[in-house]
Length: 107
Image (cartoon, rainbow, N blue to C red):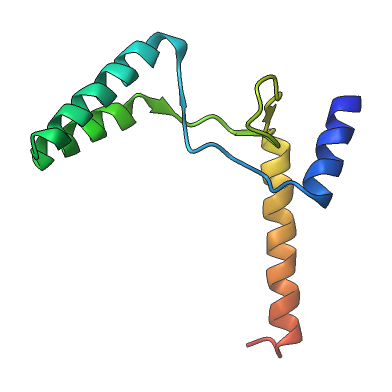
């Protein structure tokens, strides 16, 4: 719980929230790096269609994980977005939209 309190204070007062677009599973790291090397070779050969195909293949190795982090530093602990957090956000957003609609005259 102490960790979450520190995370909350850092996010609320100084460090913007970071949500990684994707993560690479340990089993796919070698293939990810191999594809990056092939992408470099394709660029050097000015083969943009091969580069695009390799880039798409490399991106397909990524998996979205609902994690947040306050730091890129080694040892920073990611925190998982819980489904309840997302549900709460949706509720707050809906209430905010309804309030704005009422304040603007209901149109």
